[in-house]
Image (cartoon, rainbow over all chains, first blue to last red; front, side, top):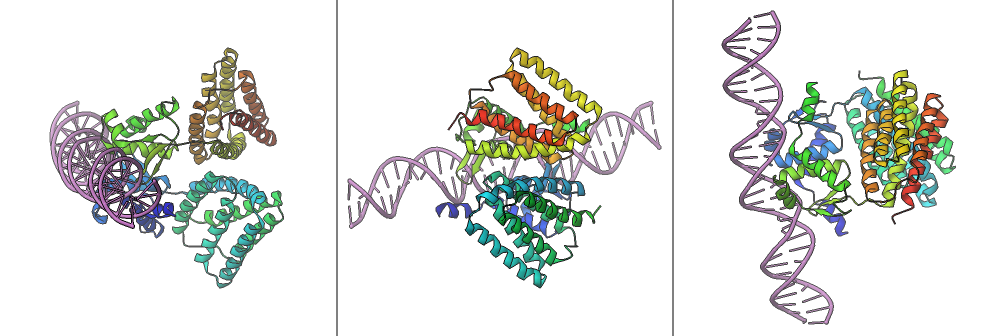
Length: 218
Length: 218
DNA sequence: GAATTAACTATTGTCGACAATCGACACAAC
DNA sequence: GTTGTGTCGATTGTCGACAATAGTTAATTC
């Protein structure tokens, strides 16, 4: 438990990185906007070193890009970036689900099912925000049990970048129910340990997202 | 071309990161060894800020891990880490090769073939070092033409970490000729645009590496 | 003697200042 | 009009110092 407490003590850099991340999520910053160290330093009332620290963290998460002697900029995600990320997410998730399928115990399937039930509730209410959170929870739960910690890190990083891109769009999925149903199908495929079906469902699910994204912007 | 020149102007931090990377490759540092900022600062005759910069770069490449207020350490790769990385590499490379297969033009295949010829020469001489470089070149060439820039970055990062792990082993592949032949088979599968065969060859190739790694250490 | 607390030391976290570099603009040469 | 050159302000790169913290050893208590 000491470990947890230790991990909770965040450095100033981390705190500022989180603050900036929220700004990006909330569209307080434009794609490609330049971030000036000194300016942020006075804004947050810290030194430039601390801002640099925050930049490094954000750069690792792919939210920001810094060019030597040119400054650091909010990452400018294009339609092509989205395609690349979804392609990556597809192969990772497919493999992760197929691995998880054999590794998950009865109790894990039950837990997954309970996430589905929550999803149904929120889908009926048309509550997109919570639905997206549950979506994350569902996918991350499976990936957590795939036996490859690198998959998890990669997946998280992709999700964060996708979320930024999505935040800059206004239109969401048309039907919360169909969104929910996709997860049900995925779950069914897992329970029946049908690897081919899992693979197909993952591909369908991601293509579904892809279509919604590509239809707009650029 | 100005871009290139610009990219060549390396900051002190980058230079030091490279120096440290070489130290790690050359086994001048042990797995898990703690790196002390002040110590390195005096050794390289720079300030601690610069060493920190170098640490960030190395951390992004996965060669070093830093824990808040505890310091930064040379990454300690275990057999499990290797398995995870090879699993990741497998799915990325499989997808990359299959995509590249349709995207590469006649000239690209010729270039690939020329790499193979160089490999044959070095394989006959039993020159492992150059053979490994050519192996890298072969795989990276294909991945460069898969149409997904994120694949390339990921692959590079995996390769670097693998190389560190390998550097800490003493035994290499038994036969340079069979190592070369694997690439010939991969090439043949590509030329014939036989996706299934490509997939199988990639899996075989990586399993081959895996066996060699897992037999030793731990 | 074991456990707890209190210095002490080594090391990282944060800071503000100076140096080097970039981009923009003005000016000169052709 | 275009191209090159020099200057200037804005911004990043690098620095060394001080503050805060973790790990270690010594002192204290029971």
